[in-house]
Image 1 (cartoon, helix red, strand yellow):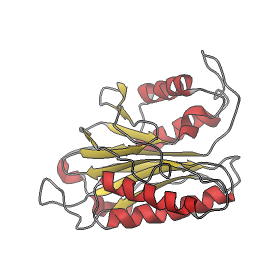
Image 2: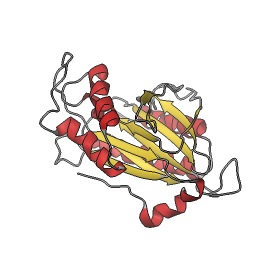
Image 3: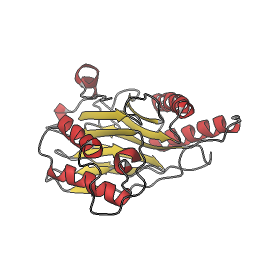
Length: 258
């Protein structure tokens, strides 16, 4: 498995925001379906707001998610615990409580199996080996922090050889005044037409948002709000023996462009 990631805070230069992504090695390092190792989790999320408080809550939530994942919980349990954690913070906060959207993907690189739990977050997108692009609807629950008793059912997908998974925050879709429909149309065109490598694809997606043509659309534009952007690409390449998490510590292609 190969990973690329990007993060761009609101306004470009301000390093304050509520979006984040993470890659978490899972305990034991063994596949749930074979004796081989390499399991890890991809996490991406968006805390409500674009201020110092949002950034602070993001840091707390990110730490909590890493802790729950490292304890060996399944994706649904990780998000349930995270929602209770954020709800608890809100109960003791004199300010208005905030919520967070989140997508948690447990990856078995040996088999390509993805187990996904979603909390009010945009669905993942898969670019297939023939460049067909599909949005993969996944079961989900409320954003984290709203209801401590919300369930987060798991959706199971298989990432086949030559396929790439895109997960992102809504800033990648809507920045530049696009609504969800026109925003996805813009990104779909990049995904379908791209013929380079994974890192080049990540850069191309950002250029579609911030480049000279980023505000061009065939549909109506909403108010030109700006938002933090976080995105991750997960590609399955080669044979199963090629896909190992232990390479990540030495050569994982996971870059942050600020």
